[in-house]
Image (tube, rainbow, N blue to C red; front, side, top):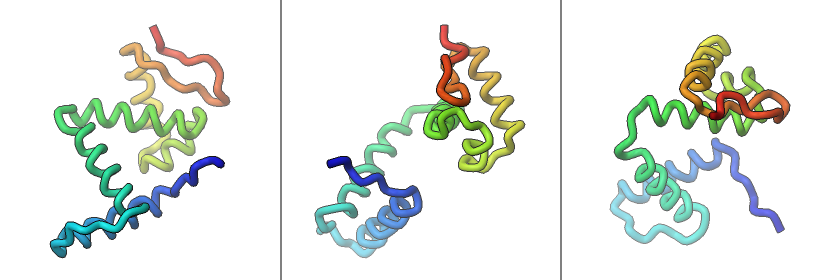
Length: 112
């Protein structure tokens, strides 16, 4: 049986619930999605520490594009940036040798 995928809004809601419990001094986070949300938040934080904003931004853009199966318009909307900004960033990343997910799942471009 496949795992249920949570929508980003659901994840944010769960993380806020955990934040409220922690801010109230609760150390007894109930098992289940709330506890999983807290663990996920801690893991994300650990993965961000020590990285530059440019590195985090690049990974976020490339992973969002991959999630959107190369659809740049959809990725730009999710990221809250213009399609032009996304295109410019992708051209920059491709010039640096980063693999860029093409629309429709074709061959990666920019990979060395």
